[in-house]
Length: 416
Image (cartoon, rainbow, N blue to C red; front, side, top):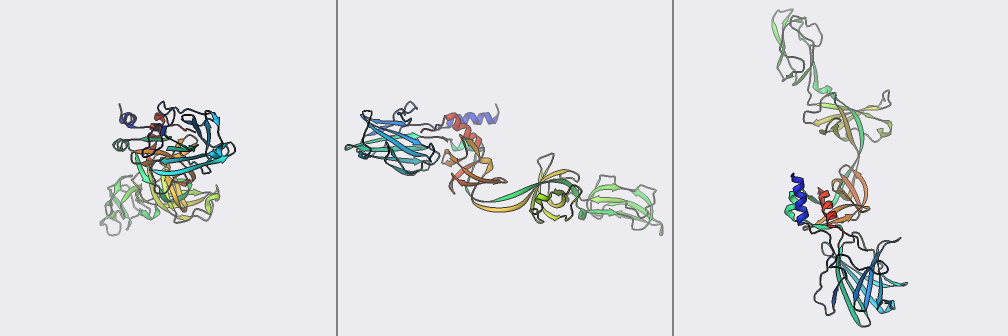
């Protein structure tokens, strides 16, 4: 059994899940009633499909209404199953969210029901206290209505690789994707010829050999002095051409070419639609077309004359790489064309789907809960957040799929 399966089993055993439960409220003179159906896990529903809260002959049906309007509380009070005058009922809904965030929703008559004129924001996950007063009698109910919430022990989350960060501002970098090929940096390439014409007596290096600065490439006998002298490497690199064999005359031709393969450039194609945005000096991230290796660099120049395919040539000097970026290799380049600082962003790696929403999972202690997001554009690893998450909230960035799986196993509900 592999590690991933063991971790999933551990999560299953320790997770509390997103379940409804009744919790008594102390310190009140009035009787406190747990919501009907809490022990069975399924609340009793009224004729309007809301949760039916009962206390003797008095009952209050409470629902979150969101058809054509933002979510809001509606309630219908009855006595012995019959409607009662709404102006004779005082009702209040109090919500306690994860992190002990509290809010109150007074209910006022409107039409044939009571209504709270505040929006019940997502997620609809909270502990609920409902208070109603009618004919001199007070009625109080409490229940938990959790969705998209679970609890995981800190040691289990750490072992599973769950990582979190604090949500806050970020710099989003807009990029343009270009394609091209690696070439040798002409500033790090040398052609080597004989200083004095003569006969090549020995050659110490083969094509493709690595040479060091000052290393002997060949021994030549001067035609004029008949003395031997050494032809040495003017830089370290790889022998990429060799046109020298013992017994040959050197003439004035190039005998060797040495290329420093650690200093390569990318020759990219820029099409007219991107020309105005691609500027020299821009930061570039290069990726090999046949692998995952990456390297960073800067755009050094953009040609002013288009080629036969109407593309302009752009050169990128690579700062450093792991040796896998060899001349001739094809590359994909992400060129930075704009930078924008936003007040709130999250890492795209932490995003998950939940119902019809894109969410991240907020963390408070050992509890995790969905945060339904209103998102702006994604640029690189960051996505701008326009709503649904507060700056300073801690959220899951890595392995958030484990939190999603645990919530789905726990049977999270959306009780309206």
